[in-house]
Image (tube, rainbow, N blue to C red; front, side, top):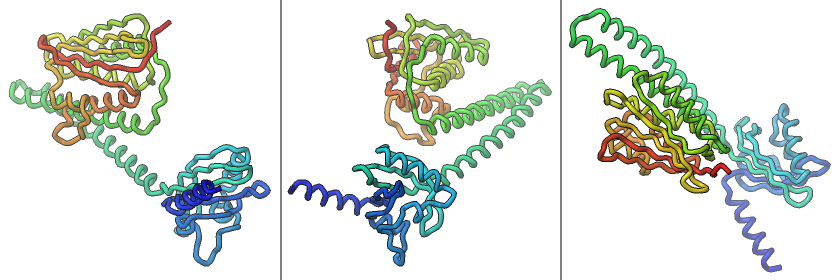
Length: 342
């Protein structure tokens, strides 16, 4: 008996100390009735004049138009299933949004935990609008800059003016690329990563084709050993496109060359390599990928592409290495979880 007393004492301590509102309820004819509530719950949902214990939970905190949704949660609890959802609930300070988790125990009891996420959601919405406006204005203004710079190049025979206008064009298109990468990063970071078997060969061919359309003087070859599959998702295409783009865009050779190769190096690991004949990735940017470097204005390098590669590969549970052989160029190796084709 001693141990169960000890456990209930520990539990009581946890119940009271949690900063999130927690309520213990009993289902009476399918309706949750409050049997206990921690101080945080009383602070957020109760008022000194209103006792909450033995009151119907839904009547106390669920807005009228959300009653049906709440009933579905209660039915799941009654069936012994947990709940997790973002919900709106009435508090002393008006309606707020909560991450709600419902945990059933015994036949007709359960706990409900409410974490207030109103401010986070609002901040996310504001940031979203800010990003959209910024990108829209950037895109429009860069289009004007590119158009004007092209007109200047066409209208002058002065080498110095042509050179300056060409530099404006190059810089504007790099800014445009940066804006696109930022958009992709926002999409990537906003999603949970679910992996499945991905066939490497068609993916590499699609990325190669896409890259050849954009860089008409590039030579891109592929060397795929067999038909390896990796545990990834469609974002792997972004990784390979970023690496190929990097290999060709910053390449100062007469003919920029890149090779994408893939091979299963063990029953559980596939190595994908992107090698080029360019000037090599500067050490500062290599650290972005291979070390746990923070983004600072000094080391963002030539864009966000390498951050994107790093974050996606990390999400797959893979790893990356970079080599700059004495013969020149760069070799980026991705090690991803895979399985050999039978």
